[in-house]
Image 1 (cartoon, rainbow, N blue to C red):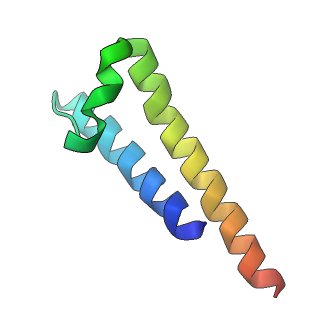
Image 2: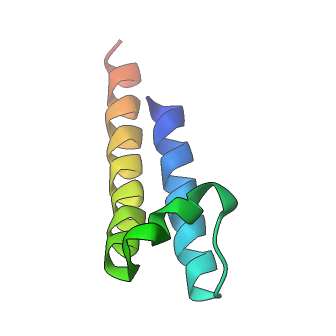
Length: 64
């Protein structure tokens, strides 16, 4: 789960950075189909879910 979280986090951060520069990550161009506000919500969701998966994935490996 930690690697999936890292991937989501990186895509979210890259999408935010590129969007501010007027570009977009090619795999995430579909999020702009629903409008600007929804696209920003999806970008933020990627970052939040990615962080949660990284934290929860890190805890599981420490308990064992």
